[in-house]
Length: 88
Image (cartoon, rainbow, N blue to C red; front, side, top):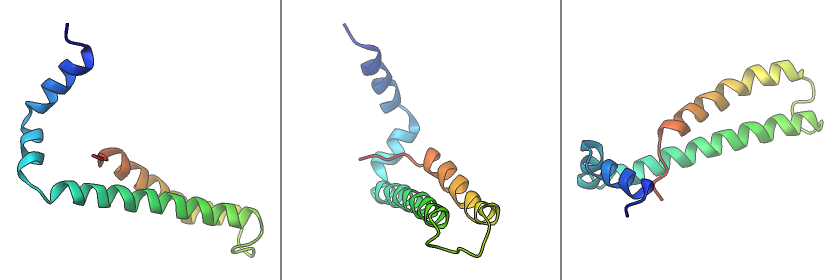
């Protein structure tokens, strides 16, 4: 008896996107690079915000200013991260 996951994998492997990913050999490293950059952007932004809260980084600026500076980066990276599959 075929499980739900196996049937889903079979259905996805028969799609045009799957065929494209199999034919274009440079696309997987590109997607992984985009994925890694997005993770790095999120981690760096969160680190800078935490260092600010701890009083180590940009102590002359308010939390609201730091939030305005880094939240667009975090949300943009998270959106890109969500649509760029990690195929490892």
